[in-house]
Image 1: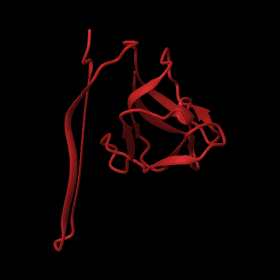
Image 2: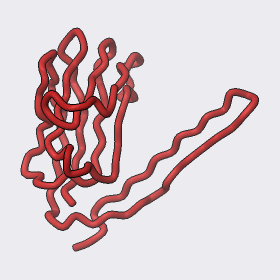
Image 3: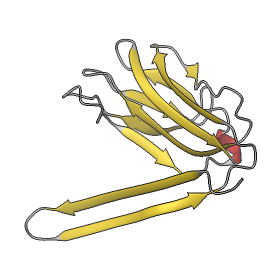
Length: 129
């Protein structure tokens, strides 16, 4: 089977003086390993590995902060560089800070997360390449 993953994003900016937008719609990917992980992970105030399940090589993925108060940082590895700061989900509508990419590089195949101030829940979807 092929073309198991469909991904899209859209970001727009409009301050009344200037408008900018960038989007990719319906990008199709194949998953050679045909493995996917989708879960809610509890993240503490000490670094924790992202729960990958059976995923050996991270392809398309998304992480969304579900905590209404605290932010979560995502790192390339334990004690590694922070590559994303996920803002709180202040309205508790599932639209907290997020990061989504088509594929992680070789230096970030075991990402870690750390919550700021208190334990947070994050939604994760990862497909294997």
